[in-house]
Image (cartoon, rainbow, N blue to C red; front, side):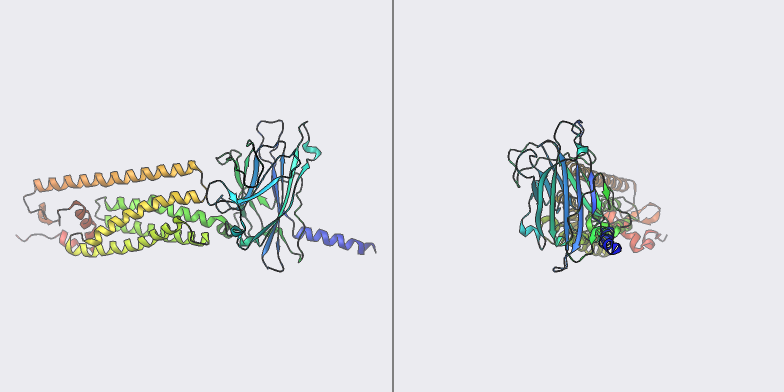
Length: 465
């Protein structure tokens, strides 16, 4: 009989061991210190709904505070854009429960309330929102310390159309943010929120990563709400992504990061380097030019494809401009090939030459602009955007300056050659032929074209005596 009585307890222990809630906490509350930091705990349990066959996310959250100032928030994903954010604020000494404001945003702007249309096929239910006295361990001073206890369930949460939420991810990214000074004139769900401390690492916001797969409850029935374990800072969670979960990182946030890195590399480095190579005056300029430009175009095509997959829809100017530029690179490549074929034969530019040059300029300018719009949409701060904008400006000035200097140098070389040689302008001293044209740019094109078309027999031809 004694053994039979122990079976339910044993089964309970096994169930908890197999599917224990994951937890992430930051313990920064200190009434007596002027350098207090954010103080919250988040517990999560995932459960596959027998009816919908989708995963529901059960959340428990606590926020420790000793005043009515400020707010605390956690959100899915690695950036604000597309994040499902849970923001808690209110007066702990009033007779009203804490406000749990569920919001999202398209960029680094004021978050707005989530509507049912925003949720897509997912759904939210608030199960608990109460102020509770803090434990005796936290009551070290005369100032009362209270804890906001919040519980929610997000049904079919993987269907959230914003930042991907994966029940099987071993390293699902989350963000947190905190403002400790805002005074609220009214506590409403859509009240305006003051900015958190902006830069990373100064206590205003940060990232953490959760092993969602660890939290999956195996039982058929809905699980209990996650239990927050006291004084446990992390359980199945960490401040850095798991190295072993590259696929989960890629699906959750890495795809967007790689999208930005590829396109920034193409527009800020590769395409400008290709222009510099073409204007370098080297006999292999054309070869260097097309190799670098093709690599840049490949970066653009892959980056745009990743952006389309990551966005789950096409509804912004940034997306359509990116696609247009990607198509433009294909057209520009064909125009460049046409220019080379015709120029080798005629030693003159024609419509494809000028179209290739001007389309390249348009692509570069649009690419630079789209980098900025992408940073705004992904929630980057004004300091980061200002830095990249400055880099783009320097890039543009340096590129224009290089082209201008090389044109002046070529013009001086041409004038000097015309003055010192008694031969016609297409014939150099030493009885070696050079196909010079009236256009300095055409001269650059021909030098590089000769290398690609292997026209060395013309360059080394000797006049018969």
